[in-house]
Image (cartoon, rainbow, N blue to C red; front, side, top):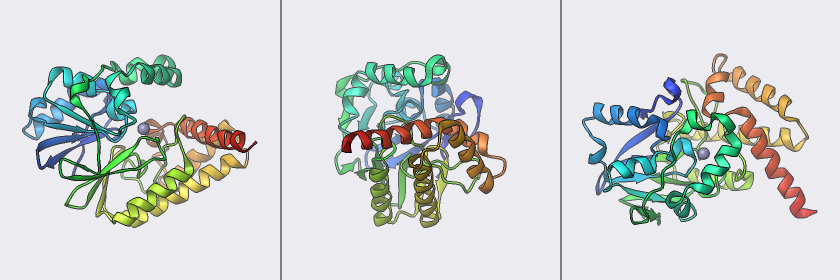
Length: 284
Ligand SMILES: [Zn+2]
């Protein structure tokens, strides 16, 4: 249950993806960005596989750190079948809007972080149903509205970002809350949906698989509520970033930078601030 480390920006333990045995041959759960394709191939090679041995790519959502390489991979391996939520389908086929939105968020850092965002031919793209190649698939919105997770018969939940970020051997569970789709209520419901299925382990993209599922999800819920409350109470971005770093450091003294690399603190501020602002506007 070890992820393939994609060594994003040559840093271990930030972005990983998973090789999944399915009813229809080997699949990959998420694929990382195009900047990591060579590391992905190396990781597959260490498991005795070439890219062309993969039958399916199961995507949690279309953010670039999870799905950016999809088009690049299909160009090289046209037999690869890509599964994504219905809302994600048009963006995988034509990623131009997604790219424009990500370029607004990341600015000049975009190319070095993510690289190419190639389209996937429509015939390779499949909207997920309740079952995908033998895995249960269900919506897990909150981090992104179109996020889905996959549960296999061994009790592994391929969670994506829906079960948060936990890296470097840390105990802190961080909810990545980027704009524009972060939704507190949806995420709280997602945590219930995961608990209801009682998986034995959670496979996170950032980073690794964790067995103590109940405690992990309890920590995720606590952090989500605490951070959302801080921002609801009017905390500004600079104060939030410092407070969030301090929050991580209290649990894991040396890992505040590592968590920031996986999902920057300022993203959480902007996502949560936008969520509350939209809610206020909606009720005004
Ligand atoms: Zn994401």
